[in-house]
Length: 383
Image 1 (tube, rainbow, N blue to C red):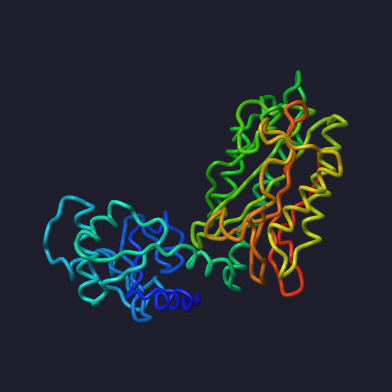
Image 2: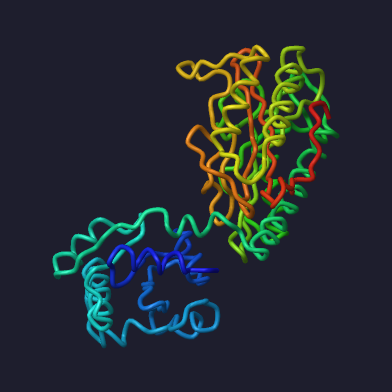
């Protein structure tokens, strides 16, 4: 990790330091800056090109062993045995003590720094200035290590989907619903299979989407109840590695039985739209360019979009992927310039209440000359 850009922002903004106070389980920027995973809040400070963690005495040894910072200090070193029952007040006392010890008065903070805490620190005479985008910008370009970890989670994602699709492939239709080994095949049952496979690969997945029939026409509806035959089943799986904290993301749409002609046409259009997007991927192209090409393709193919009714192509073409499922760069009308090392999803979709929904999603890495698709899972509508 190269934090020179953060040091440059601190200097150019006339600041003395940059701090984060949060849980790194919740704050991807904080984990990126420290490589220290903790569920309780701790203090990170970047000052004079040095990174410092301030943690509890209980966490000092673990932080010293596992973090990537230059120095690890304890809260007790700054606060002694003082007991402050109010959490915000205790955090304020810690932050101001650390800033005082480092002669830092003008301080940059991350975009998620708590407003209440910021006001309390300011009341002690310190100036806090939000710095947006700097750490997020560092995270946009992945290192070789990060690319390896994302690919590993992607393989786990594909193994999980393969196990779920195996159930669908071996199911039978009973009065419009799929049954597996004599009992109804449900969204909940498929999610359980996906989850068990991912757990076995030391990954977690929350909010997994397995939506069937009419539910598939609502992009982020998680899905519930019986899986319909002759109807689309949309899978959207975005697991996270327990160890590395990096994510994968993949969507597939399948049918067990006979899809309608309209659904087949929608599927073919989405698949072709994804190819259009891939054909543009290379350094220097903007995410806005890619998204606009997909929008234009759908229009020319005759698939209209009505944002008010929620029909057609109603979301972005993709997004960055890393420590968060959705991060920079954007592949949307506001998307910036792509550069080597960006990891992005390409996920066009079409949604019509009378037909159903179709989404296909792969993960790509921008390379020096183009891109590499790191998703290996097949795209096949009828299974």
